[in-house]
Length: 76
Image (tube, rainbow, N blue to C red; front, side, top):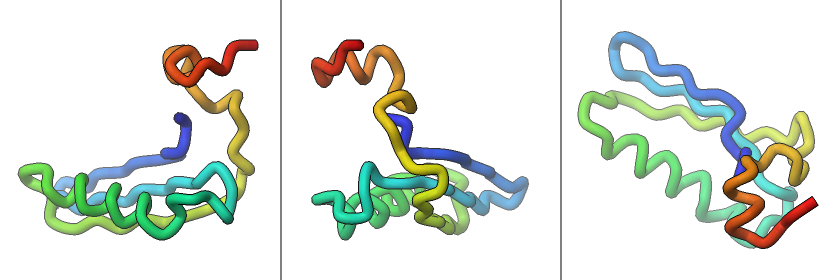
């Protein structure tokens, strides 16, 4: 969906994720960032996960892959 802006993994297994949500009032705003952290932390070899939530740049449908837009019926 284009919500992940950047991922950096250090040689020590520390992960830094920069992500956004569709809007600050997104229905999953309280759960999705935590779920992302938990899923990444469960990957073998990952020591620590730091997640930064940002709204710059503002998310738009153009950030979605063509496949994601097709799956959601967003065609333009």
